[in-house]
Length: 393
Image 1 (cartoon, helix red, strand yellow):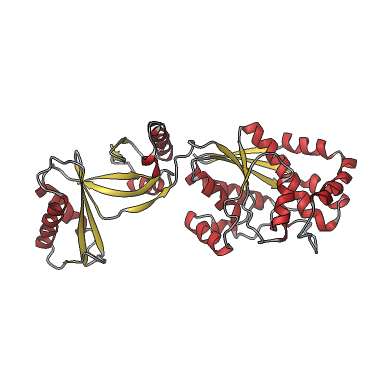
Image 2 (tube, helix red, strand yellow):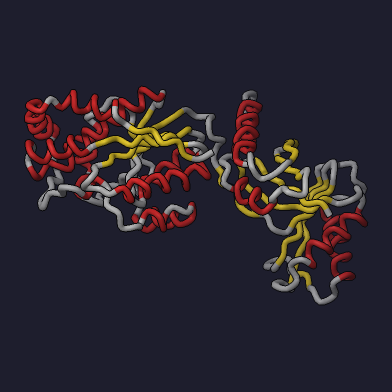
């Protein structure tokens, strides 16, 4: 029997006259995700994407895992294509699908989606008939309409498809349909989650990482590259801009008040990120800050940080508890890498008593001291010497 991947549209079904633009971008993103899994045929109809293997070397399990990570899809399954467009053939296919799962399950129900309205039976009749065929073939099974071990789904379209393993898709909107933004990517838990959440809305992501060698190790840099690779499974290709930040951090530590070190560092990071964002055509910045999580993330601190740039700053995890962020990071596969014990530059020169309720004027006055080292030239040099690492698809 022939296997095929069926992927259901997410919210783009609600789009009106420009829906085709979203569909084209979705298909392009699926093709990019499947570029090296073997030969296949891609098509779509009735809010469903069909990924049909064309060769024996097509890795359908790997393809299934990748398609599940493509934003814009609400559900994905591996289905079995019925040999004929008949009830009997559909029943036979359903029996074979259920047999594959018998070692673990003992109850089932049948659900039918009848897109082909010319098929002689309605959905309820088809479900009843297929259920009877399954019980006749596998008498040790029983029907449970409320809490079954197996849900057998029969889709009557131009062809008939049967599946038992429907899984949630990534949801959201296709990448590339809602602009571009630049993520400040640290080595922690929060920023990869923030980037994932904005990308889920169709936004193309690039990233900036601040690297303070030798105070942060080469392994810390490799860790962030690994995080970007994990994110690219959802977000597509990410251009990671690795900014040399050591000289700027040393200057801040030498010339600025201790209690303001972290805030001044964050403000300059924002300024550098904004420059890179404008160079790359991004329209906003993204950070993983959450109100009150650390001293630099109080409401007052966030206000003075934002004042350093003109570009909008998106903070999708701003109101989340840490545990909520951790759960998302585990689900998208970044958590284990994020907790590797390699320091990032934000942990260098941490003040003993950081200011938690700063005033903007305090920061502006403190930053005047950096004019003695020509901070504008240092910022320009850091941008010029930034290394670009291309990660992902």
